[in-house]
Amino acid sequence: MKIICAMLACVVVLSILPACSTQEDETAEAPIRPVRYEQVSIGGEGRMRSFSGTAHASAESRISFKVSGTIKRVAVKVGDRVSKGDAIATLDTRDFVLQMQQVDASLQRAQAEERNANARYARSRQLYETNSASRNDLDAARAASESARASVKSAEKQLELVRRQLSYTKVYASGACSVATVNVEENENVQAGLTIAVLNCGDQKEVQVGVSEGFITRIHVGGACRVQFDALAGKVFTATVIEVGVSTSKNSSTFPVTVVLDEADPAVRTGMVAEVGFRIADEGEQMTVPAFAVGEDRKGRYVFVVTPDEEGLATVQRRAVSVGELTDNGILITHGLQDGEFIVTAGVSRIVDGQTVRLPGLDGNK
Image (cartoon, rainbow, N blue to C red; front, side, top):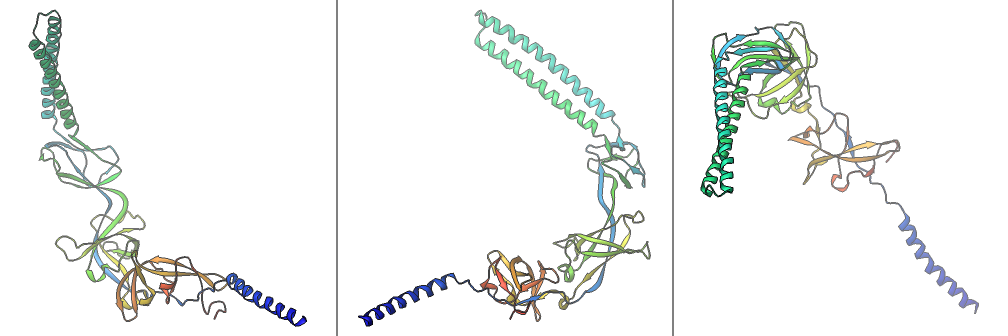
């Protein structure tokens, strides 16, 4: 009997042990995956490359008339400072005044005809109600009344148009500006849309240069550069790239790049010849990463940026990047990464955005 009880106890214990092992396996935490990583950097500062250009105002206003006519008065000359609302030039208004008077007379005649037509229509209605006029007479009187009303509306619109044209015989400054050029003289006939004056508005100056195709891909909006003017020897201005052309300039094989001076200087004038210097890295000095560190899916190319913490762990974040050509040192990164950031260099396809990973070699990790 004792032997049988002992055997039953062993069976019970053996049946419990697998269950305990299963529960421990279920509650065990999933291991944190280690990843390889490296810090990206630009191999060098690059060489300064200069391109020639000319300065112009950041805001330029080309003044023209909306109607043709004869210049009666030019109120400004080159170099003048104007404020918003100041008159620039005036056309001879006599032809426009005569046209307005003619249209006004036509309007008065149309209004008189409308009154007569309305009166005839009113009489026709009274006669029709007493069976003293036919239905045709009533319809004809109503049509004449409606036609007269339409003529009045047409004359009113013509008068409004002539008045607007009369207002176009004067042009004004749109803001505080300097007069750069005046292209007309008094008593000169001008066509609508012809530029009669150019105003430079704003104190900031821009410089536009032409950059060859070999360097245009290495210049980006927001990049820093320096500007020197032949007329201002010894002065060096810092500037920022604000526009990078995507096609070559007309009748040129270069791409237009526009930079704006960081600080206004009254000594810089429109038309001054400038040399703009960009620090452009050579291929070996650009940011390169191992080709297998760049992944690609339907959303485009990407890398995983690593953000380490104090415990030797890190969080990875997906970052979209733009790449250049493949070189012996790796694949060029043209946009998306900053100098000094850490990226995952192996196992990119086996991790996901926001995942926590372990960094071997950081904080004593192996």
